[in-house]
Length: 352
Ligand code: NAI
Ligand code: MG
Image 1 (cartoon, rainbow, N blue to C red):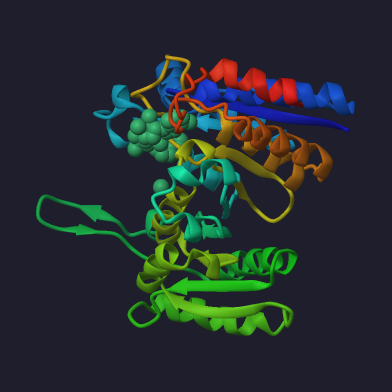
Image 2 (cartoon, rainbow, N blue to C red):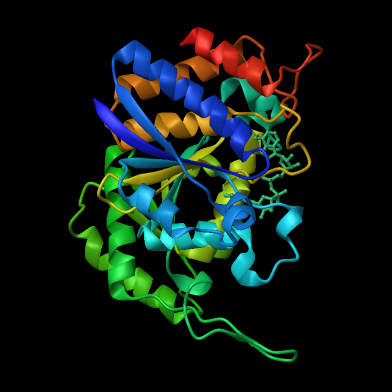
């Protein structure tokens, strides 16, 4: 197959982990006879430095013309004092919005070789296999009006029927392809947007009789994610709740450096990225864990290109390198010296 992929390395460790992910893509291309045309573009701080715009028009154009997008991470102290239109995160919010990527998908699954790194008891952590489906382009982070003065501030929480329906459908379809369990998370005891959300989930569930649905409040969901995470299969929720719950759930597996994610819009196109940020504290040292970026490539191949064999090969290689006791410095190394980003990537390529 021939596919065009836009690569947005971004800032901090973004370029380092993206380079590792691209090497994996190139190895897959060779071994399975695919052609991946890579086109690089700027986003975030790198784009601000180059052209005073966190999301240049040209970047959006390249993404629009490609089959999928691979992103590193954006942000860093260098731009922290910038006015809001010149902040790196602005580029990320804008690209999700402009490409219409309304569904953020985060699979969180126990990694046997890393159970010791989980803050949860081994018996609890080892059972985890869930996916959080977060609404990404609506709600508090985008809705108008918003306002801030010195003694008054306003954010709006708005959801339309259409926005809720499409994310709920995405989650039902995903639940159907997994263990058939969907937890819809809201705050329907207080918020009207949540009441509408719950009503739409009730309407939709008629079309998915094979999926078992449970409505849960966000506060008790936060508790249950820690006490009994194995109870969850697919979780669907609005933007801010999903932001918080997905960060909470991500630590269960032990390292931020392990988890991939995608942002999609229901037509196969997606933006794939590690969940971690630009890690300015370790940037430029060649010690970042590239696993999340590499596993994001696996997710891209499976979900956007239907390359299941290739995706499984990448995941198999990553887990086998971990099982052999090869770790980057963010993971427990048990006496063995930690590998650098490029050394660890080389092990994965060898395995592939
Ligand atoms: P972060 O995820 O960048 O780092 C948190 C901690 O985890 C740091 O100690 C870092 O060294 C470590 N870490 C993260 N990824 C790692 C990896 N692959 N290997 C080894 N260690 C890793 O989050 P933080 O520090 O809150 O944010 C730093 C910058 O990143 C900020 O400017 C923030 O806005 C931005 N950010 C960007 C995101 C994105 O581009 N999607 C997401 C989250 C934060
Ligand atoms: Mg977040």
